[in-house]
Image (cartoon, rainbow, N blue to C red; front, top):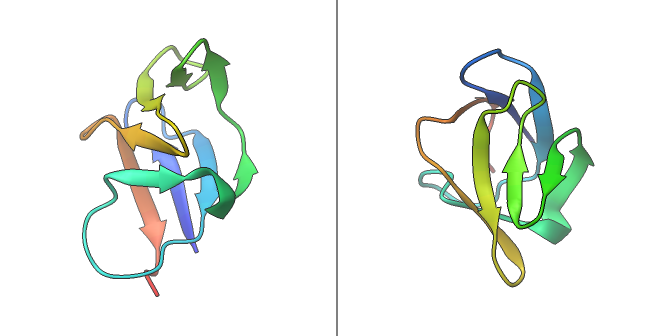
Length: 74
């Protein structure tokens, strides 16, 4: 389980169940367990205004260097 936080203000964005190795480039909607983000159209934002990613069909395309994460990848 990964905790994804805003790189600017360090607030929690969401808890995500990551399976497999590699970078966090996409977050699939069905694997997000807790969502604390702000949805502005097709953009995912933090409450500080930092744009975290963009909603695609069944996943969120993450913007690199806009977020940090802690936890373990399965």
